[in-house]
Image (cartoon, rainbow, N blue to C red):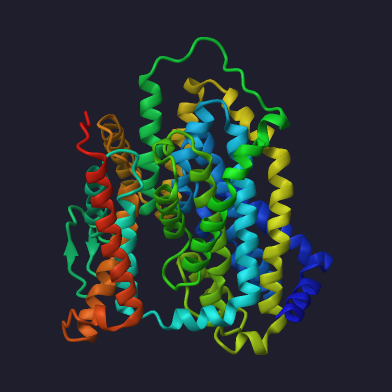
Length: 496
């Protein structure tokens, strides 16, 4: 494996290939900053370019856009509470409070460094454990995925900073919103009030509305502070102190491990990994009351998770030909356009392509870190712009990003409606993050549960007779019992 990785390095370090790797990660970062655009749009627009490049170079370019967007998505999340990508939604929960407390530079540095370490862990796992992780991924069937998603939904109720009952209610709301549209099995329309909702509610519309537009409304409702805000952007204020750096070690390790695991599973992706990493970090933390107020470990864990997942997401894509998400489906499409069929033979028949792409992750993560750290001061200076001048620009960016996703005016109107809903929710201390995770995981749970019932004739015992599924059932029940026990231990809480 090490020899093959060195072969990949010899490919990616060629000057022309290295230039495309740099262009891919730099473009990906810029795309990630723009709310609602995302890697899907950028890769779709650049697919024709792959006709004029060899397969290896085109894959390195498209892969750089993908994981570069994970870096860029955290910038708008931290500075403006606008998740540039779905996986950076969790970054808003801790990054934006840090920016509001004049620690935006520190938040950007921690996000960049955690992303770098998470990406490096993902690359290491790709090099050393690609084949064993492929074998494990093949053992996941519909029952295992159903229980894995159920575990994620229960974990989502721990994301909120307030009552777990309210968080669970928000998860349920998200699941309900995810049911809007055509039934995947029968094709019947469900909760479709207008023809434009036949394809369901857009994830981009929901995320931009609940986080971006609602925050604009909240800030517009406040009186602007007198005078210009003085922001400290000295490098010594950007780098975390010794105690802060020490507190990030285990969150980054846990986040990278969770991200690497979920990235290798077909059909999951970086967004789910970041949510799970944040929820687990809050459960492991000795000071969970600090979450939601600008807690650095709560920022580092999901950032390392989503970048590790974006690297290991290429395991099922390249070695099995099974896309982990929509971006990976486009990657497979680009391979097919180049006359290459992804699958178990790719590693043997196209070693330069397979290992060249993996080695480009190693080089690309270094490039991204070198780009990000000098630009931290520039990004923080955006906060010097008065809020009242930022509002129109933010709303315009949101509307353009949402419209470009599906070219739908209805999506733009839904975004504004979700913004009002998010504003009301935050006023009554209902967290929006569990809504988004319920929206993502709800359809996955439905599809895999129904597939399980069809395959096994409606026998519920299949969830307990298959080892991996039974283990996940045990962990889910244990998590529920632990949550109830910890709630009873704290005693009744009056939540006003």
